[in-house]
Image 1 (cartoon, rainbow, N blue to C red):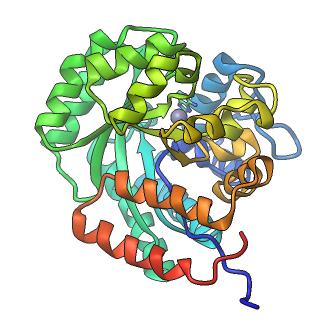
Image 2: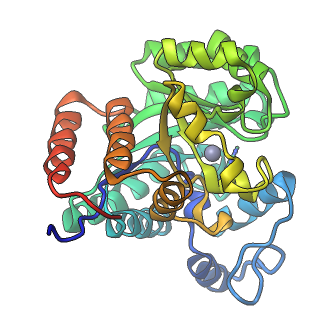
Length: 335
Ligand code: ADE
Ligand code: ZN
C-alpha cells in the first residue's frame, strides 16, 4: 500500500493583509502603540459580524503593517504556512491603498512583500506572485491610480491586477478603463463578482472588465445560461467556500454550489480568501470540500491543475509547477 501523499495545492485568491495571523497583528500593534482591541478579542480572534464590519476590521488590522520589513514578515509567514500545507504555488492580492494608508509607497510595499516571498521560497520551494487590487468602494479614480502605479513600477512578481472591496458599490462599467489599461500592459486580470452580487454582477464583470478569472463568481449558479457561458468560455472561478459560509452567502458547506458548478463543467479552484478572519486555511478548504462532496485525491489534484493552468505566471514556471503536480499523481491517496 502506498503511504498517504499530501495533495499538492495552489491558491489563487488570498488577500495578504487578510492572511495576517492575529498574534502578528497584536505583536506589531503593541510595538507601535496601536489599539486593535476593537477588532481582536482576548483570545486572538478577529471580531466582526457581517461583510461591512469584516471590511472595517480588515482595514484596522492592516494598519499595523507600516514598514517593508513588517510586510516581509507577513508574506514570509503566509507562504511558509501555505507550503507547510502542501501548496506549491500561491498568488496574493496586494492592496497599495492599504499600504499607502499606513505610510508606505507602492515600491516599498512590493519590495517588502517580495523579500518575504523570496525567504519562504528559499526554504520551501513555494512559488508566488502578486496581484495588485483596486478597492471598489474607493471609486474608479483610486482604482485607476493603482493600475498606473503598477504599470509605472514594474516588478517581476506583480503579474496581475484585480478588483476587490464592497461589491455592492460601483458598477463594473466604472472600472472598464482600469482593466483595459491592465490588460494592455500584459497583466492578468480578475475581479470579485458573484459573492454578494447575483448573476448580473458576474455578467457585468465579464462584459465590462473582460476577465477570464472571477473572484468567487459562485452566485452564477442562480442562472443556468450563465453557468453554461462560464463553462463554454473557460472562465475560472476562484472559489472560497469557507469565506462564503463565514460571511453568510451560504448557510452550510453542503449547500455550497462548488460541486454543482464543477459538474456542469465550470473550472473551479479552491482558495482561503482571508484565512484567519474566516477560521480557515487552504488545507482546510481542500479537506472540508473533499469530505463534504466526496472528492478523491485525483479530484483535488485536478483542481490544483486548474489553478496552475490559470495562474498569472510565465509559462516556464507554469510548466515546472505542472511537472511537480504530475509527479505527485502516482500514489496520491490522502490529504
Ligand atoms: N477584501 C478582502 N476580502 C474581501 C472579500 N472577501 N471580498 C471583497 N473584498 C475583500
Ligand atoms: Zn476576496
